[in-house]
Image 1 (tube, rainbow, N blue to C red):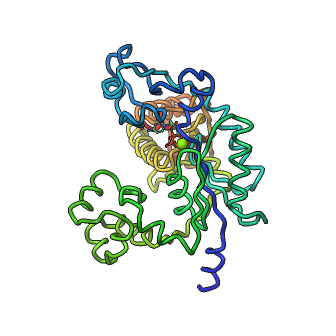
Image 2: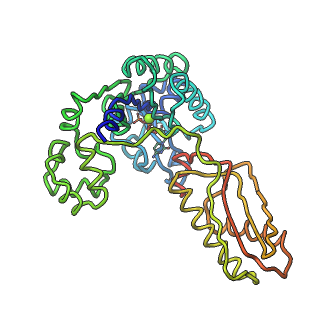
Image 3: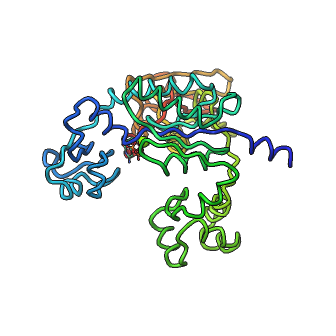
Length: 361
Ligand code: DCP
Ligand code: MG
């Protein structure tokens, strides 16, 4: 255990996050926007008052505008603000550029979002701080965009660090200063502390990391369940999670073997529903979407059919759509008389869901 802990403690992990990503790209391309409140959302006056703010520049943030706020509310706070609809294809190009830069420093890159990744640079001989400076320099030179980086020995502290000195900053958190850093951190900065949890902490008089560290594991568990246990360790800067850099899984799905073969369409449809629901749940949990739906059917003679339906755009994670596609594939390939032993539904050609797509989940 002691040996394991030493190796874990010696890791060098960076968390890189671009500043006000979509907004910064638009300001780069139209510098006259820099001095104005810029909100990346469809103008609510041209959208029946609907829409959500993807992000906003710092001028708009000073007016209280933030990601996930309704565009209507943003308009109220900044009546003269500039509303721009997101241009995802443009952001995707920049995203690919910065992820290419990351890979110059290590193969161990875990992409988290368009503008965000963890890098395990333990094997690089340069110091984490030097690497952070060099990465920020290359991003700026090649994309004209600023970024923030947290440098530490684990993902939790690296992430908290990149948030701490945002925008355009670096925070290095080492073993010597980690507790001091956490002491002053407001409770809302800890992972998993949302509005509800924050309210509860307010009632308990817990304001920062120092207060949090003084709570016992038992109390935290009683008050907050599993999250309480995470918070106990967060307050101590302990986090073992590895940078998940391996290529992501090729497909996600489920199949079911039946003890009694299925003979009627109704039973098949019920099974497809179950399989599709469990598929949707796994995809959502992993924030993935996919372009290829795979259906597998096996009869009691062990004849197996697999069919794939690939679309240009990712499938919507909608039960009715996926069940209908599965059922249609079944009907196209299986006669009216059948004896089905196994059904399977899976998704491949996977990609990470963007925030926009996730909001549709
Ligand atoms: N995004 C979105 N919807 C959200 C949050 C974010 O569409 N609810 C998009 C817009 C952001 C991008 O993802 O520009 C990156 O997300 P971040 O959380 O990193 O936010 P920003 O980069 O905009 O701001 P920050 O400077 O705080 O990192
Ligand atoms: Mg960002």
